[in-house]
Image 1 (cartoon, rainbow, N blue to C red):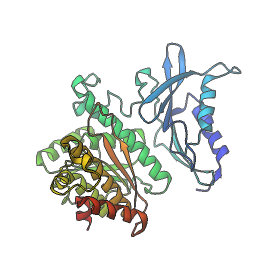
Image 2 (tube, rainbow, N blue to C red):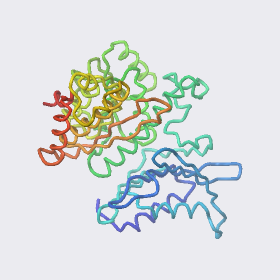
Image 3 (cartoon, helix red, strand yellow):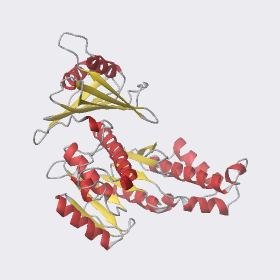
Length: 406
């Protein structure tokens, strides 16, 4: 895959995006070196409204999504849709992912402002959904068989009122998973899978396997990737139930009974997921990911009792007494400190780490997610190591993740 002029690659993507008969969706994300696009991420698709077919653009900033619909215009006349696309192509995004009914295109902008383009053909032509009821750019439609089987949606294909929070959680996780896999693949940090050797995804502490099934369904049905998912949970009952659901849905998934720390997999996974593993179970999940040298890790921690307990037992260093004087502030500080140390430790073991918002705080107070991509650049000294050593020394704590990896 050779580099080509960026403008030429973008003009090819422009032609596909502006063709309402072939575009499934397009996604722009990331930023070119030293540049800052107006939006963190933008998604484009066509919808059929009462006024006719429009280009729908959903742009995401730091806190919310902004959706606009643009008319296509008559041939030879000014086109709001064309103007909107041209404006977005001018933004310094680092990645474009363009899906058509027959192909998927990945465009990565290099540091030299050239384009690396990877195109794959779909196994079969897909049908495009133009319904306006998807104006929230859903990753899985409400009537998806997986959501119905899991009890998130009714048999009529509507999300149950009591399961709205769970649906929102699944959607946001899939959005992060989608963007993370796209970026990791475009930079060569995630291997190219095949039907003979599919991408291996493990969900640690899977429970009822909401994420396991949703991830498999999205990656295979929407992204068209060959994927095998494995769920790990300590309960035999969960494994039996999940295996039965997988069989009924025809999903390529397997389930292992065991703890996160001791579960045995036939092959190391490429992608490790861990959603709301309690306290040090998150550390166990991160330690296993490092042990397996997983290419991509997405972990949403739950409670942080371990460091909080250590803070209660050790004197607070000056001049930070106010941070731990009140119980609620001490607990919140422990949350932040724990995840900061986890991110630092992963960096020391060869991962590039982002700490991002998982879902909005009104849906769950546990809304932090650690996203780590393995670059292989292990840090043995320097500023990162000194920052970590100084932090644990100042506060007199010993992170559980450090103990597990040592």
